[in-house]
Image (cartoon, rainbow, N blue to C red; front, side, top):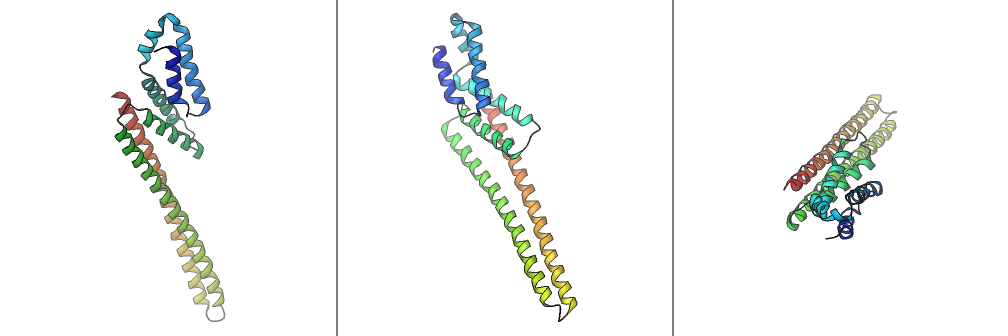
Length: 194
């Protein structure tokens, strides 16, 4: 295998990375070959391993770097998840194992999405019930102030329960996302050690 073939195969494994990370990785390997010189290409290829192994090493290093950064915004988490998925597919595993893990990841992401949708639905339902109960309570003012106070109190109670459930489900979705990333991290590290 020549340097050009090696870099082309490596490009196939890394081209889906974020642009900055992709450029950095490709520059590193190009400079590595440049410093060794054309007469040492075979030695460099032997040191680096196959392009797939080199890509796995880069993805693992990038995963560790992104995981260690303090920025945990939604965009950053999405980028970390994308890198983790790329690392899974670059891992030297059998295709059935990759399909199984991809299916589990998809199921986990679907569960997280369901928790977020359920939390939002509970919050909106609590607000709607509060509105209805307050409206009904004000229609009871001519009849009984106690009935009005009971209606408003019940509405606020329902809203409070809705908010608590919403916070609980959002916390659960966040925890599940962290667990998913930890599982992917552990899985990719085991795959690179094999």
